[in-house]
Image 1 (tube, rainbow, N blue to C red):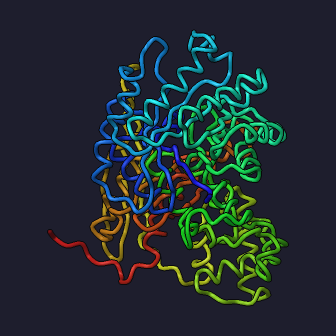
Image 2: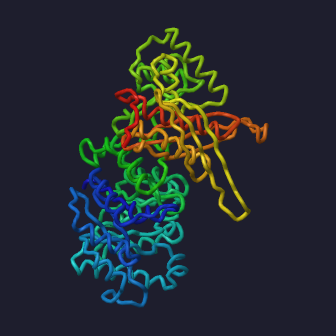
Image 3: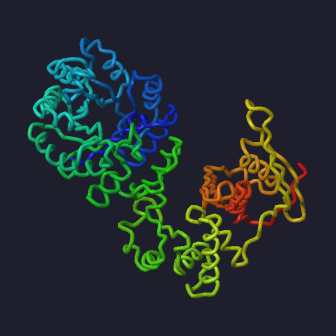
Length: 529
């Protein structure tokens, strides 16, 4: 039996703090997961909220390449008969071929959470599954809190599995719901379940002990045939197992081609897509697909990886849709600078005077507090200036920022006035904003967009301030890092000054300059219209 990948981003992932999906969001994510090659997509809990009901209605009209949509819910309530139980009826109304239901494996949960007897819980599990099967549905059974339940009362936990199998469950998913099970406990318990279970087993791990990926891979080694998880590991508390890490490990380390040929190369894209829809900043240090996963900073590392990537890369970055990055900092040697120059189309030997000059300039600026690891836009501008190839898009003639607060209850009002020169034209304008940086950004765009309409594509995505050498109090230098992006790419820029407005201006100006680096023609006079 082929290993199955079951994604619960739309249900379990949506329970993460700071995550909320609209129906349209869920549809778009489902389509992206289908393109990636996911086998089962858990759409939500029909009956739990109107959004999930609407999702199951709308997804019927969406053609999917291979993924099967699954409805999720619980066993019937104690005291209800299956035929009249609202939860089971809502699951049937979702009109999916496959339904996943969960039941209690841990006596603590049976008596404390459900408030019923151990025997009655067994009946809830068996007849809920049997009823759904009698209605023509395939049923997957999530044995909630199974490993905690097994450790508390192994015979009872195993009996819940037997009853689920007798009811007709086609998959039994062993859940580490509290996320605290150790890999060696998985290894010890798994064979005990296999010995009494005649249907394929799956694993559903949470990450509260930072072991969800390890536990999942151990389960696969022991014979798990279904893996449940979420994209980027989002989920309640510390999250679910990160399917991005699991998929890469399964395909590249364990020889399980689960997604289909060539699809793993779209993993990073799918991960970023889900982060974008969830309005979460991507984790740059995420294994395999994060920005830093194949980033090299130390001079020795850079020199070695240029000779042979295997020296410091355990898999080719392209295998998961990522890329190798050489970071620039005061740890960077001549090899690193020469490599960065090649990225900009400039080939110079590492002992060329320009390389030496640029390396010295880099070290000086970082000594002053600049940091270019997350600000490659500013670094490229510095490189072009050093090589004499940079043509500034504009020059600043003046800048003023006024913050006015008339009484204690009033929200501060911020206005920025700016004077810039583009070619022979001087533009003087003002704009208001939500704070000084936003006001400056608005004023600068207002002044420049008539010359460079492409600036309308640029969004300021993130703004970070760090105080440097804090022993000087309010006179300390600050470093401002800005991330900007358009529909094609994202880039970072940096500014450093004792004045936060000046540091912000430097980063904002570089952000605009970077967008305009490759403009095809000289700045034009603005149209009268």
